[in-house]
Image (cartoon, rainbow, N blue to C red; front, side):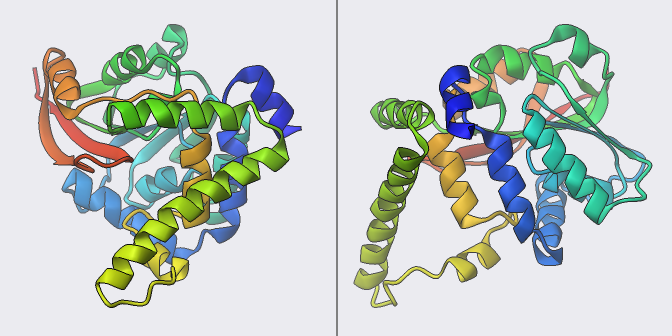
Length: 277
């Protein structure tokens, strides 16, 4: 059924992947997400702050913001993601009165304008999947209050490699379930064999240790679900850091922090601030 829906919609079923991930959420993963927000936003607390999670996915980072004291609004285009975030809230913050979860589209002007402004607007690895990345970024920026912060992650533009990945992702979305697994495992083998060779050349154990890798991940995510999300993530757009700088600067945002993947695949992370006007 999921494969059939993806074929019709031309979109990856992000929510189904996140619902599967919920089974792996534990205190250690939650704490990593909390620490990730602390580090990137350069804060110890978000008490008294309004936090908007655009494309909330599993709800892990909405939960992290709530744990830091923020008043959280979470929304996602994908109803399965909305359900995943609602489940996250019900299990890990059942009595939270400062956290609302809803379905919505960042490209819907009436919806996003109705949300108001926020001290932190957060959207990690989401806006490049809307099919209209730059309009989506602009609408997200409009939700940042004076003095607020804009924390996003966008796929790095690798030129020809990015165009090839787009073909793979489109193939995945339009494939039957059995072929999806073939594509995912082919990508896993490609990367893990490369990593194994590097480890071998460094005289280390060449075999992967996903449990250890997950423990070392800064965001508390899952290796398997990250692979599925990466292979299937379509629509797919990319951006170079200087394009993002220029776009945000003309909208009166100043760069506070940047973490890049340099020339590799994956997401560049940006934290911008809007000065008080």
